[in-house]
Amino acid sequence: MSQKKASPKRQKMHVKTGDTIQVISGRDKGKVGEVLKTLPTTSEIVVKGVNVRTKHVKPQQEGESGQIATFEAPIHSSNVMLYSTKEQVASRISYTFTEEGKKVRMLKKTGEIID
Image (cartoon, rainbow, N blue to C red; front, side):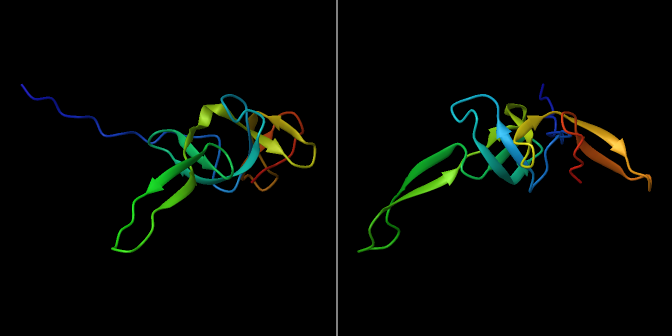
């Protein structure tokens, strides 16, 4: 009997591309950076200057030399918190509505509206 493989589900994440975050666990704990890319199917994000890896690239053509490339690998979104650059503090988020009725994200510690 063959079983159907379930398609990956998109997770609702608390961070978006362009947000400033602080890493709260792992090797890069305490680092602050900007979210470059989000991967909702795996709940991972790519952050500038965080989880930097090196990759040895073989030469593609004859006579060309190899290279050592550095790149940011994805980290899980649960290992980061949104960061307020004004107050210099990391915070959880809550969802509130503006006077116009638009739903926005707000930092719980500072009350700063992100969107």
